[in-house]
Amino acid sequence: MKELGEYLKEKRKENGVGLEEAAEDLNLTKDDVENIEAGNVRAFRDVLSLRNMVKEYAKYLGLDPEKVLDEFNDFLFEHTSKISLDDILEAKHKSDEEEKKVVSPYTRIRKKRFDIDNLVKLKPLFIGLVVFLLIIVILFIYIETIRNRGTSIRDSELMGMRSEVNEFA
Image (cartoon, rainbow, N blue to C red; front, top):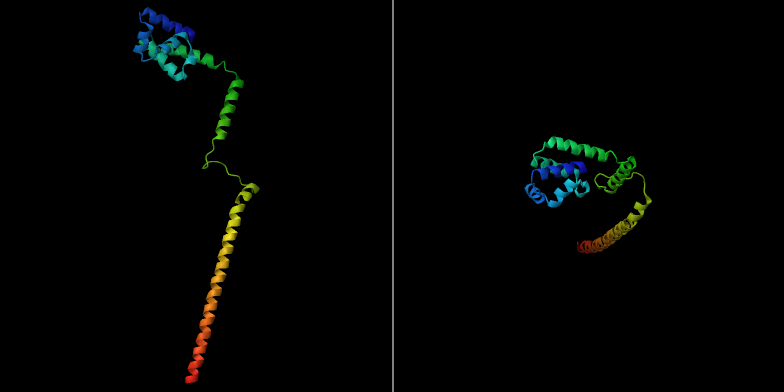
């Protein structure tokens, strides 16, 4: 990239264009133009934006943008082909770990086996349910007892009234 940057710088100077003027005309910062001319790839966030800047810079200088982009792509290929296999595998391993950390409750795989820890978590709920049902049963028995007592008192009163009616008859 240094050779390409130096070539662009040389053409800019041949055209009599200053650094600030080129930056202003391209809607770039002065630092961006300096970094392109210095071949400082790390100063840019991504290669695609750098590629577009180089293409626009080549057009601005009156150069064939396709030839300049071919040079840029050659640099890019040369640069990326020097990445070791270990670095690639390490980066893949890191991305796999990050994917494992992000789990949606809608897509995660649920355990199918019985888990005693889940049963322990449900123990207070189960005890509460049993106590609630026991209270309901006790209330039902109490209400039925009161109802039966009331019925037996009424029945005995009715029986007494019937005997009095039979005496007068």
